[in-house]
Amino acid sequence: MYHRGLKSAVPELPEVESVRRRLEPVMARQRFARVTVRRPDLRSPFPKRFAARLTGETALAVERRAKYLLVPLSSGETLLMHLGMSGWFEVTRVQDDIRPARHDHVVFEMSSGHVVTFNDPRRFGFMDLLSKRALKAHPVLASLGPEPLSDAFDGRALARAVRGRKTPLKVALLDQRVIAGLGNIYAAEALHLARLSPRRAASTIATPTGEPRDAAVRLAAAIKQVLTEAIARQTAKTYRSARFRVYDREGDPCRRRSCGGTIERLTQAGRSTFYCADCQR
Ligand SMILES: [Zn+2]
Image (cartoon, rainbow, N blue to C red; front, side, top):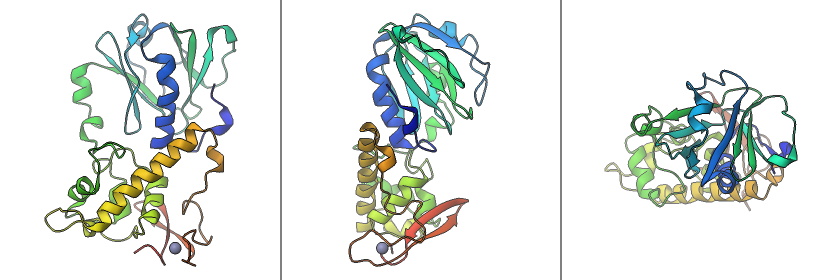
């Protein structure tokens, strides 16, 4: 059961991963016994015959790529889902007899007896059904960089991805072609942990030939650490007690021992960046 009070502002990778971990045991290897769609669209219209194409098919797995959830189906199609700004799933059981709440847009009744309800007040989420070929050619998925929590992502991969890039490091980290699914909060958190300024040119963590400098190795490790810790918090359902290192802490003292600096805010590429100018270089 998911508690409404625990959802965060905009889902980032850790939130989506925690959703995946919650959905997997109730959806994977189960059939869609009944699918109810309560409106014609979310951010975009549902695909044609959406409910009919799902009903009776088995969900083979529940996977994640960046902030997308992918459910490969026995039909060969893949159910692609995105939480948008405010989307989330509630898991109940058929016998719970829960009446639909406002903004409950899609209901999956699984053969396991679990009911998975997608609720999205702002409707920036979306759901689509894609053939294998369409999935491969998907304009966003096809261009995504490595998953930060995969073994393929390390200082070497990060250095290669930012080689020659003169954009500020923080802006480069938000580029989904550099790393898949890293968002505004965890990019700032990782930079603080790695003691790197969000303002320095991205290329400075790599040598001219794209080899990792120490900064790239530190940053890759910091990205893995902040995401892993955030997923653990999400899974433990204590998200609200999360103590960010820098995010949303403008004017507060730096949490690094013996630093004594103050967290500052600046705007980069239209997004707020929080950092400590004393210990992040
Ligand atoms: Zn500091």
